[in-house]
Image (cartoon, rainbow, N blue to C red; front, top):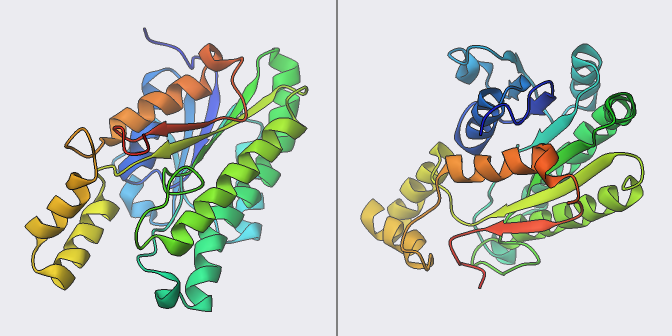
Length: 252
């Protein structure tokens, strides 16, 4: 099946690499007009066939200006995020504030900026618009060691998602959350390297990550992107307010 997003206009944050890049590529492959952004615009230099821009989602002014430039859209994929490693004793107030600003408030900024146009677009096209938020299995779904503030932020994303879904369920805008387990990405590989330095080697760190996955492997960005395409498309027109685990059985 192809062309599942034909005629749809889609915005994807953190599209320079990892899950965000995979989602933006999958949206483009399915026929969407894609607007890809990243804090590091150089990561988008090789991304052909999409509108690319540098965007700091921590800046309300920048997000509002970006929304004004892009105009009304059908799909918003909020992917930008940060993984803090540690317990409550390792989490300073600055760590807490930054994590919530990037993982939660950035979604608030993006939704608040783009939602008015999504409502207009949904009414004009007669098709529901879709917001896809990247949460995590480490949230209200399951606790994960050394993911204290990260888990708190991703739990907040689920509350945000359900609130938006309920408030706009009758106005043509759906909102759902994807809750991945461990997924291969440059940021994850950097965390493996960092942990390896602390516990005696990269192989040992890799084993720690993989051992908690019942399937015996980590996920691939393309697998998360496939779910994002479904949630962005009309195939999920009756789906809103959900938190969908995609974690290789980790949360069972």
